[in-house]
Amino acid sequence: MSAVDLVDFDTALERYDPVLGIEVHVELGTATKMFDGAPNIFAAEPNTAITPVSLGLPGTLPVVNRKAVEYAIKIGLALNCEIAESCRFARKQYFYPDLTKNFQTSQYDEPIAHDGWVDVELEDGEIVRVEIERAHMEEDAGKNTHVGGSTGRIHGATHSLVDYNRAGVPLVEIVTRPIPGTGKRAAEVAAAYVRTLRDIFRTLEVSEARMERGNVRADINVSLRTSPDAPLGTRTETKNVNSFRSIERTVRFEISRQAAILDQGGTVIQETRHFHEDTGSTSSGRVKSDAEDYRYFPEPDLVPVAPSREWVEELRATLPELPAARRRRLLGEWGFSDLEMRDVLNAGALDLIEQTVAAGAPAQAARKWWTGELARVANEREVELDGLGVTPAQVAELQGLVDGRKINDKIAKQVLGKVLEGAGDPAAIVEEEGLAVVSDDSVLSAAVDQSIADNPGVVEKIRGGKVQAIGALIGPIMKATRGQADAGRVREIILEKLGVDG
Image (cartoon, rainbow, N blue to C red; front, side, top):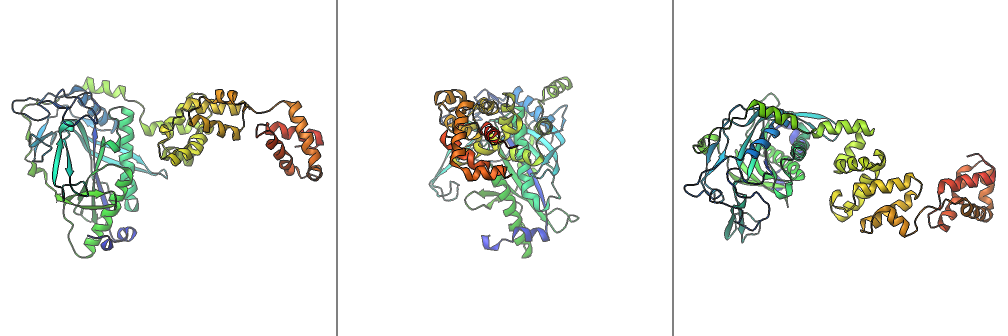
């Protein structure tokens, strides 16, 4: 369906109620793969991080990775799930070139974790609870590279290359129950949910959770119904969406596309779809298979996994403070407004500010540096804040120089620029380049005398009660001292000399 056939997003939501379902796959950061000793590494030479088990060669036998099970349990606990006393693996049968065994070892009717929930906070502070149906363990497939076409997809390609390095990498798949009631915020809710999971994975240290590397991938299910009381509509599943912006665009496009089909009296097809970053659209993949089409049956080469209750509770006790609780704690400790905290989160600056405060800076000052000048530079350079090359300790040191009145705000920005250029730490830069504030009263007094003599009209206004005119006397002094005069002390000296109360 072409773009001209789409129904406007807001118009679509006036007539239909969207229901979401999201499946998130996270690659676990174990040293080895899910069922064999091949290294679990990123960007190795193609087909080098493999073993006969990775390739599914005849006679090979899998062995479950205990660390992967541990990570799966931690994820389940963080998502308020029940942890199964016994669960098992199954064979999910289908053919694809990157799946050498012609089946994927996964979990079907007995997942490691089930019946959980997570609260998702939107930008304005609204909380949406998303119910988790299950979190199960499985292995990843290899990677196909389609060559010769213009899109990088199989359609139009002349041939395909297969890299089995990713085959067997441990995954946990988290499946939600249907998410109703999101209305016009459906796209925002979908992205916020995946972001919440990404942050949990990082906090648990079970994955690097880098979406650009495919560590976290989301399958976005969207369906429409005529009202919240109507039966669920037919869903589509857009596969492997790996950025928050793309998730939002997927939801918006599918709502508009499906609304157009329903408006015309058509039927939405249950299918997988592909998202196209260049156009923000989705295209048909294949008719969606149901569970029976995969011919699941228990994996005969693996015994059931039965984590003891003692082990589960030991793991529960090791869980770190989770992101939502941490944000609430820091909000109270730092005294930020809700808007200030949202700005911090949107800038990706929470960790950096926390480290800057730990290094001795006041919280509000740390926030202003990271969400102000440093965010501006990061935007110009098109890098993340933590890629700028300035450390929280350096920012704290810089603020300490300001608080100690050794430099002023203007000089501080100049010093920060030099830190960003790799010139060293703030205090050393100030010392080496003679940037310290001039606070010697004898020097400032002479400069004040000169400014008073040069500006009799301004002096008359100040003595007449217009104290705000004092800036016209301070300006020349700051210029004469290359901005290094202590402006506060200069103001005090001027008022003393003119006999005026400040």
